[in-house]
Image 1: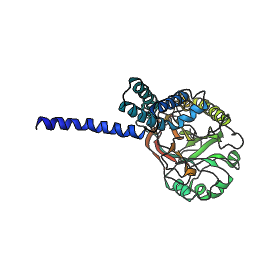
Image 2: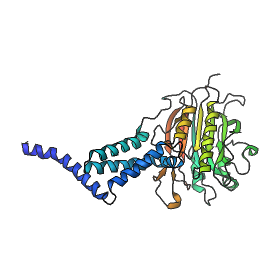
Image 3: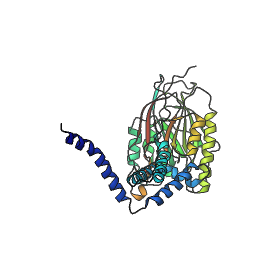
Image 4: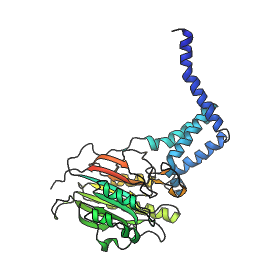
Length: 356
């Protein structure tokens, strides 16, 4: 091969990168780089102080967008090199990228107890057609289904779900408008509400957490619980009052889970109205010792803007299935669009063997 061909061959990648930088610079020419860096810096400082600033916690819902914008700013800075700009842009990219890309705690590699499939679904209350939701709920091999935004209207339309799952908490516990409820094929040994998690402020969607002690269908009625399941729905933090209520809810829920007897595996699932990047979510998992069944700090979107007819990837991951580290996650996935503004989550789990 001739030297000229070698030079030409090695030059192509460099020329290609230069071309990309030129294109990005042209696309961002309408927005001067310094104001962009300034806005990103303010947004980053806000979410770094999200524990004290609601606006910072709201920014945390959209960390992927912050990261993408930081990458665009970095590429734009590299295309017109100035050391300070490059350093600022690089710092922003690292600050906004690390929460997404950092290694996440993992559940157990293996377990030797019974398997069960759990799912959580915010049903989007007061809509007309629940056909796709009912079909998915009853046709996906689910053993324990947690639901949010359930009122008397939904219960009247969920007859097929009620007949599919042998067990549900007592009507005296759930009431006419339970908001948070559960359906299961496993035995419910006990069902209670969690103190300090409700009721939500008037006019706010959010429901008192539900705690279920479950045993496999074939177990004796006096059996020790094989698993404790929490179904939750704190309020969405649209206002200061709702933000405070959500944070108090997560604190009370965390204390309840941390106080559970050692050795019994725990599953906590529902619409948390909190992304994994929120300091309140991080505090919750630190106190409880639970791990995200998704196995990543960058889970897929679950809440999207159906009211704006936006694609499902544009939104935030606020629905979660969290499990004790002793539980094996055999399969985890985001479910299909079933008519809500939330996508459901489903996980096939293997529990550790309960001794005694």
